[in-house]
Amino acid sequence: MERAEFAEIFAKATVLNFALLTFWLIAFIRHREWGYRWHSRWFIDLSKRSFDRIHYGGMMLYEIMIILFCLTPALVLR
Image (tube, rainbow, N blue to C red):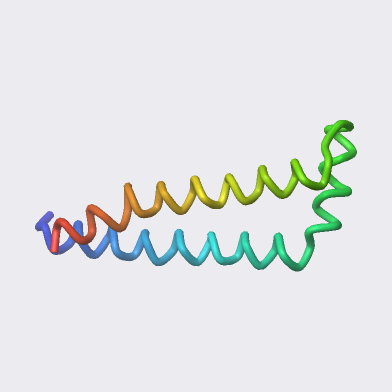
């Protein structure tokens, strides 16, 4: 494979992962209460504040990983 092909694969992966991150954010905003009720069945000491922190922290970590492992190689290979 050529560098341009790898760059294209990484670019497509970046777009796909940002779309998934956007879906996660929209689902979290629209269905926060349902998600909290569902998860608080398993984790009894889970507060709403902790639930929010876990999700926002996960989204932030996922975004950093997308930038580090998808976007950066796509830009370097172009």
